[in-house]
Length: 114
Length: 113
Figure 1 (spheres, rainbow over the protein chains, first blue to last red):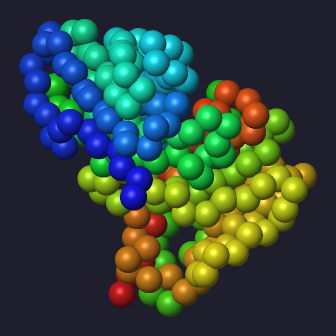
Figure 2 (figure 1 turned 45 degrees about the horizontal axis):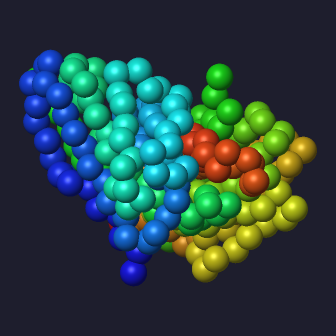
Figure 3 (figure 1 turned 180 degrees about the vertical axis):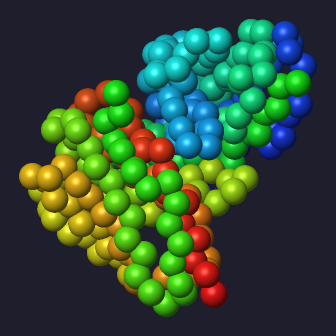
């Protein structure tokens, strides 16, 4: 069965902290994505990666960075967390040349920055 | 600029009736469209899709209609059930392109018993 896991379901951090959100997929997918979901704004793409050590900016990359050292793992980093980064963060993966129906999402991490 | 628009943030329907969720897009390069369903505290799950070469796709209680000339698609749920209460996201992609889905802002559907 397809599995995308995220390291934490809920996370509370303080302003200025460095935050790591981890995502692991067990489907040998090349493509991985990080989104954030906010009420009224839908799903917005932060970063994505087509392969190990490759990354591309999405629509809202400011304040974030990513790391993809291994194929199965894609990390989202908040270098200095701010209150406006309080959100639901969703990771997804998909094989190459897949249609959107093969995009599998993790359960999400609800991050609160105080 | 929003390329995929869901203009109704919420919709309330009585159990057993039809739910119609609408979605408009502006990019004529999109050739594949999807609907995702999301429950609170869970990731979105794929629901149904349609290729631009079709105008209708049906899967059980769910049917998606595509009107290319109007750049409009809709999701019909018949009959609606309380378990269908969720946020529904419309998404679009250009196949063979960047493989990035473009999502709408979502419509929260509430089905009342």
